[in-house]
Image (cartoon, rainbow, N blue to C red; front, side, top):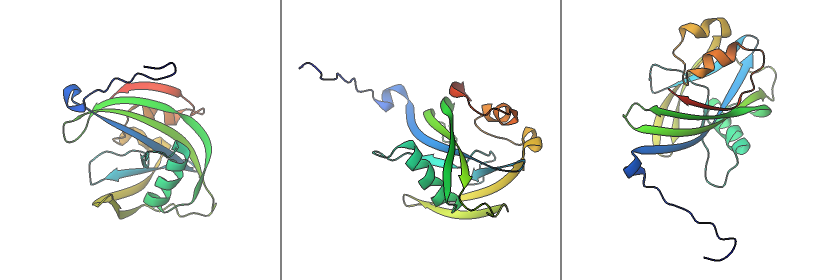
Length: 167
């Protein structure tokens, strides 16, 4: 090993029984409403977003994902923070997820705030996406994941920088 070389330890996903996800999530507000998405009638709602591709930075990924999923041209208004989340997904896999959160502004101020459903082809798999606008006053009654979002969205200051959660 030469000076400056980085020693990397490879960790087997199978040995640790964890799958890793690197993603982005966008908060789009209109008056007192926030846009959420439910994937494949899962029974829970989250902020729209998706996976970051290798070689893509999180801001590029955020704009791309919202354009693909919501069909909305946005700009990043504010970086909110990073969440490191550990949870078990619907297939019973342990997930270690790193997610960058951004506050987004539609470039067209007269965008449509109606609920809608669409099918997205995500790398060869069709995914049903139900989009719904929830009032901040109503989110207490909604199954939102990750769970920390319910408390965060009630606050005036949305910044959180770095959270570690176990949902």
